Image (cartoon, rainbow, N blue to C red; front, side, top):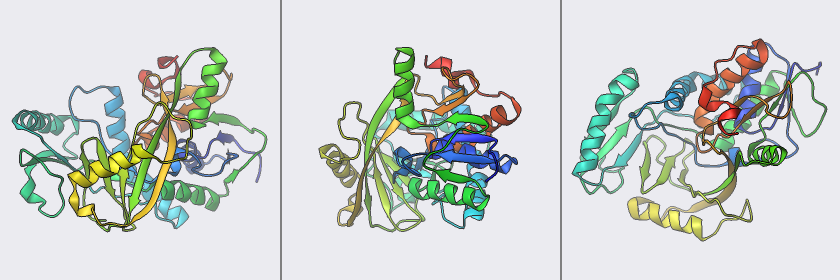
Length: 346
């Protein structure tokens, strides 16, 4: 290809989404990753695009809401260019409510959602009888049903992004020289390197484990119960995840931590009891010290950029992150929230 205007280092969801948005705006882009597409946490299987609760609103929650609203058009564009499914679908989410106090709190949030979610999506308290065949056990008999939550298949989504880029002449390669503006989207390894460079902990990797079942509930909402996500995918599988492990030694092995959440999910949702296991997965997610994405000018590489720290919300934030970074890289326009800037984690 001709000399690139933008080099993105890292073929996870942040890197690929930024590359895609830059290509859509007319830039020539190359993506470099020695490990390939989705080799880290972005190659996972869960894909819960779930919003923060609609109360105690802040810039991070607003940004996540905006990104979730951008998602249908963003992923539809990727699929149209690639000819490959991303597994995206706005199917909503159900959550059990334990007692009268949590029901009352959920109803308060339903009122706030009407304003904070701008009337575009709904957070509602509904009887479990509304979902007789597909609901977690709920002691109160009530559930939260929100229509903003969506699902995606992470591994398929990054492969679709890479294929969309290829269809537009943008390469994903294992090595090569930097050309044009350089963006570092290198996941937890990048946070580790940055911490070493400045002799200060700015973030680290937290391991997550998940399991994939052969259980077809593709048109049902995702579930969130006992801190476990249950995600029915478009391809007829259902994912359960994930663990959050700060202390780990092997990034890719699965163990008793996964067994625990698997049995927690079965207890909350017995209909999955006899579903065959398709895959056990483990990976490491980049978590900044502030827990927010780290976006903007790179703190130790003058003239270059960083996009990292999509801990648990990387796929949900990717459309907005890509737009914010493309604005900054291509035109120098900076709309990045203060809580997302590198200095917030330094």
